[in-house]
Picture 1 (cartoon, rainbow, N blue to C red):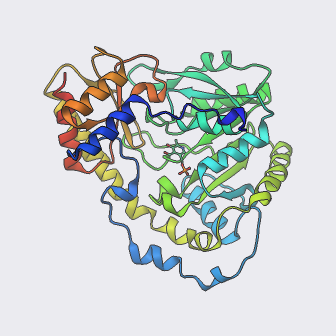
Picture 2 (cartoon, rainbow, N blue to C red):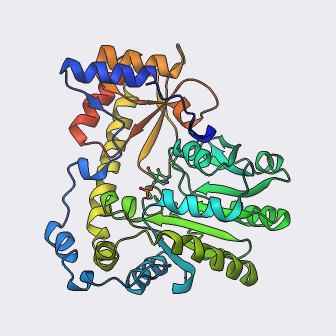
Picture 3 (cartoon, rainbow, N blue to C red):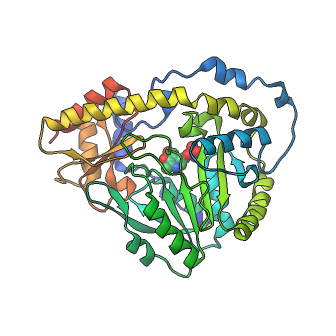
Length: 385
Ligand SMILES: Cc1ncc(COP(=O)(O)O)c(C=O)c1O
């Protein structure tokens, strides 16, 4: 009765089974995978956030395929703060970055067409692609005291069916930003092959080194779709509001926007109260981001302190984002190691293969975990080697 595209293996993987057993046992868990900011002890400006949802204008329905102007104006102001001048008409509001991806995939791809995605990267792409009948082709990121795009590898992945290249800026979980030189080359490649750049900037504001993020929102040398939203920028995933910005050569941009407007008009997804509150949500991002950056810096410093006391494990360089990649002895496959850690140390980490790391010996840990839980969790992980 069901479509092939939903024929997923829905059985729990062995790590999820081990996690279920652990939670049934009632033992305390040191969770180094947390990614929900509303569950990490940050102080939100509750009155401001909830008050913004009380706007009487929310009693009126004024459908607008691109989203309410007041909200798009706030998004444009956010982009201007990031150095990108974005006209209001080039912004389309969606309920999530995932939904924005689905609009772009639908716009660009016939069934079986291909999109290039970085490896390692974020596991949700596989489901998004299945749902839109798109085939994902991986291009390598290479690590040498920092990550970079393997531009040659990327170009080799292009076929007549390729419709776009996804860049995650900074990438999850490697935490590296797209550099100006990489963007120039990416633009040349994409313009030459008549394919689009799709830039995911949900973590753009979270930079930890000297390198800060360069937004693609005004990138104009190739057709570009830039995606972000409230879920990470403001730490408000429950509000379900994101945006899709189209830029590029004028004529291509106009055609893309005309078609996207029809896709958006078909769903009219974002709700009115949240759109009306978006200017306030974006204003309060600074307080949230300050707390988050402090948390990440402290956890990273703690991680480095603990790593300095042993020799078996190291961490990879990172520039931004919410995660760190640990290099651990590949004495067993990553998943086996993660299960062992859970069963013997009550510490929960994500194995690298969830994120398409090329080999074993990688764990991904969340840097937004509460500081005490993080310190104890890392101690337990390192004590296993
Ligand atoms: C790189 C990246 N893009 C997009 C998302 C999803 O964002 P949203 O909640 O807006 O769908 C995530 C969530 O973790 C992410 O890590």
